[in-house]
Image 1: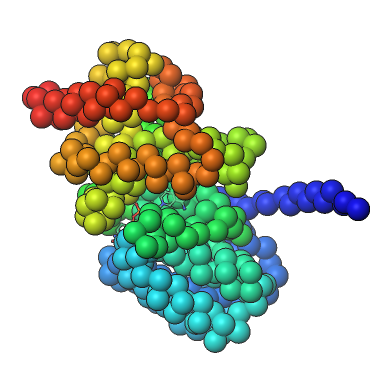
Image 2: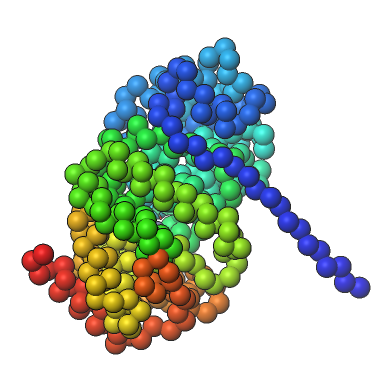
Length: 378
Ligand SMILES: NC(=O)c1ccc[n+]([C@@H]2O[C@H](COP(=O)([O-])OP(=O)(O)OC[C@H]3O[C@@H](n4cnc5c(N)ncnc54)[C@H](O)[C@@H]3O)[C@@H](O)[C@H]2O)c1
Ligand SMILES: [Zn+2]
């Protein structure tokens, strides 16, 4: 006997853009969640209140307001920010233990306020407790607002593997508050710009043209230009996940991972001294140089890509790219995808194709082009 079981589950969640999320009169968060009473637990990237000293008091006032239907189960829990949050599995255990000790059930909300790394780590913990608590992401960096934080994945690094453990778990809501972005250190400011170039190069030529025109504004930290970038990039990212037909990545094609095979390896080779976003800038430059070598983009297109990245403040060459171990990144990427190797490259600007084999000599030439371009005067 055989029963062919088929299940489809619809996921729906709002992604809201606002300012002053916890200030009096801002209803973005309650509006995103609906009015049902629920318990809530907040996990906060410790670097956020360092730069926004009123935040913890604002959170407290927000939840104790008479009109709030949400009750804080405990004071907010501060955890280390940055990749450290993803490199220590004991932290995940600690977060899960806290959620169980507080007797959070599947109706409770876990609010996570922080950069992409903290969202990934706390999101994983929340997705495992009782097989999934309701996660509300409040991303505080450019990259997490326009890329990681609006997606459906979380994860941590394990046994030397980037994102080696993780789950697919769409959030209950995402609220992006632009006010957090003003205090970002320069590398975190630039990180999200790299992801915007990534999605533009393979999906949207108009957006790419706009990014190139605004590159120097990003470099000089023009907040208005950056906010437009965040909205457009998040919209494209969400659209890709919604329409690609493979939101949980069962197939091998992973267009949003353009430039990421080298980027993930760069992060690991540098022991995370190079951040994810900075590594993505170099990774997409490398794979664009490879596309140039293979005749998939023209010299003029290559010039625009590397100029756009550099003018935005991104570095396209890191000494770690010269290490022979870089090529292990292709095998590791394949293992992470499952099945055959499948790497996305641009075909012109705004379009893409998947490639299942990399010509190592052409990649070595691409590395040479990248190194030369990065060192010669503009
Ligand atoms: N889940 C996904 O789909 C997905 C997608 C892309 C990237 N990611 C992951 O996201 C991570 C990178 O995220 P990121 O670029 O946000 O960096 P990050 O989380 O490492 O944050 C960078 C630094 O900025 C600090 N910070 C955060 N908000 C701040 C603020 N408002 N003001 C001052 N400092 C602040 C952090 O504590 C950290 O020290 C990587 O681990 C990457 O793998 C996940
Ligand atoms: Zn990325």
